[in-house]
Length: 292
Image (tube, rainbow, N blue to C red):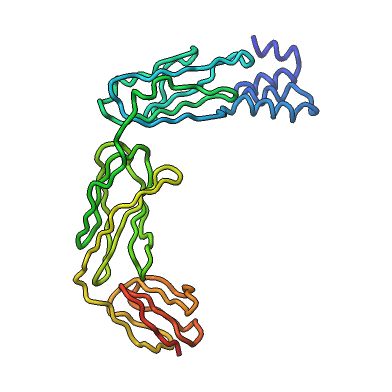
């Protein structure tokens, strides 16, 4: 029936029918003149892209009560403000076509973390009417931080939102980030550990936790004394190769403090730098060398 009707009306309608099996957008384009083509593309892009003007995110703790949200209505656009709601990263099927709605938290364990994300259109903003029911007094805290021969281990509580840990170590009188890891998130107890190769003698570590955009908290500083033998090197007046007694992190720095060579290994080739006085950072100390 459709093919017959199209044949009676010519190729113009046939093209529209066949293309409409794949996409409405191509159908719309095929039934307008070239002068209106750009306008249709612009219009269709507005139809198929779901963009939201704002996002409201709250984090708290479940105490046995649900959340109620005020949902404004736009007479001009003939629609309600809220478009999508997520609870702990899962989208909810709660109907939002009303001036107020309830977010059911009853499936959560008591005192578990609550993260609510509300996506809404422009020219409006929803409001959580009883935010106090998920208020938490739990604050982020490093509950434990230990070091042994092979690894660093620490525990935390009160990670209200996922963040990032920066593990720092003192190297040549400066704190240096040696590793970054994402946090697990959650108000309860979280455990972490990383492998670490200590240098000889004293090793000092601390952990920086970044929560949100610009909120940082630091662990206490822990010092670990390694029984490894100190790394030695030769010669002190090299022309090309400096050899180390064991694998080590190294850095060759000029008198202005600029790093010229840096790496990890049991030797370093300094033949490419000009003759003169330099500093060699290795193991847990700094030595002066004279390049010939």
